[in-house]
Image (cartoon, rainbow, N blue to C red; front, top):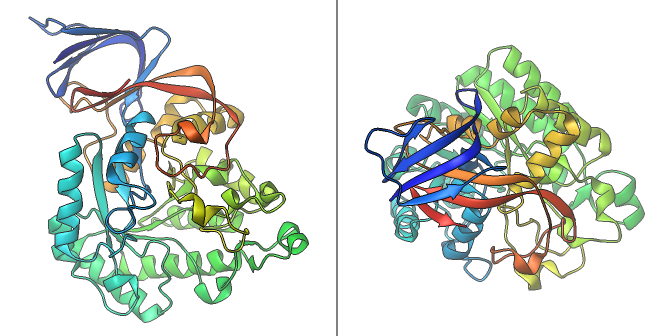
Length: 423
């Protein structure tokens, strides 16, 4: 289908483009920006005055719950949630059931995703067999099957020798390793940040040392092995500073932050709000401000939704017993816009954290809006205000700490491969 998108503000962070122009889509690709290509005849025109047209969002951490956890969510429900949030490409962690540790599982997931024809799915392969931390997976075979990186998800990797071997092996293949920094012996049994709130509520605590010790070790190992290391979901001020120094030293280290940790602190746990039971735990106001500043100055590369749909039975339990995680695909854009407005970050830089930068880390072709590339587009009204109603979210998981909040920024159209998949 030929589509003429008229009168919108076109933003492409990869090229620095930020202009009021028309966009022309022909079949699966962007045919032109600005002037219509010769002989172009639109079959549909979208009036985009007041809208921003940007590359489809790229989410670096979205659990789709398939295979094995379909009682929490299905590929269909979460793909629908993704495009409703303007997300056209996403990386899914390997902590499914069974984990993504065999090529056949990866190929099945990619086939299922392609058959839906909604969102591009990029599997993150398991770093160790069964995520048990004892034996490395066949990374080369998993990469051939379509894995773009390797990770333990939230499963610990307590053996330093296994960690060293995994980075050495991945380095020889030039495959990135994604790890959430954690020293499991210090986090055992904990559910909340080690601070005043956890003490008052009597919740077992997770000190920041759990993360900072692990970040320090990973930085040293990245230096030793020259591996490409991505640190997932930083949560502390000290971690941000260590990454800042590692980048200054020229190490191949990148990192992301969850949208939740840009807006919430341990105070939001209130009286045992289980929707605020997250991994890593919500930390102090000082940590939140450091994360925001680190994202603004480029120390932190990208924002992810850390989308983790959980069924009601597992969430409506006492805080310490409730399953951790929050749904987030449909909130990623407005929460990023909220951070940008409150931090004085320009729209182009804010959208880079959701498009070109995560695409570069993933090594995929998405995250750009230019003639000749696939027409994966997000069109949104940055001023449209809406109230977060969990029952109206398309994700099968309605577990969000932002329920009832008023947010600005609403996706009106999402296009994947030139097809309008949400409006």
